[in-house]
Image 1 (tube, rainbow, N blue to C red):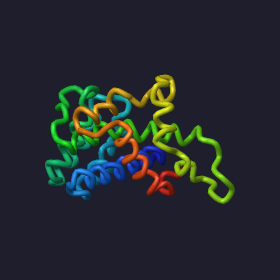
Image 2: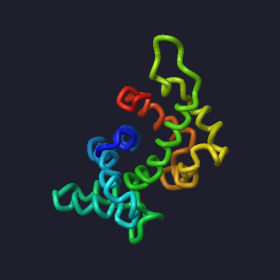
Image 3: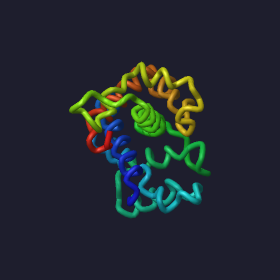
Image 4: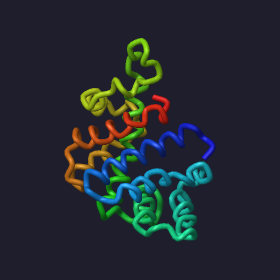
Length: 181
């Protein structure tokens, strides 16, 4: 990946997936790997979304990567890549739901007031669940972050939206330096 923002997005999803694995008492490493690699083919497929996830899945299969990781990455393309299966397991739904949420949290961080002196570049530290929820209903804010996709955390994962945001936010705050926020 050449694009710094794409790498940062993948780092954010990796951190959130690891936190969600911990929440569900699952294997944190495999969940983190799924988050890190979920958009590994994006730069090559961004002009043909029908190839997104299909390409990275073929790479991972060729390398003999664990089927759980492959299934989660493949299912995160559900609803926008033809033939991608609907997520079924917690790992798959977690990736599907948190992928969009990381973008919303970054957008909230970018419009926050500058942090106090001595904390320059750490805008993510000033983001709260409440500040994300305040922007939630404004559909024109971070319009690309599908609220419907994120909100499935309640039905599919049994995690209330504010709690899901809290898990993701804390995970991202823990790597704020890597995210440049």
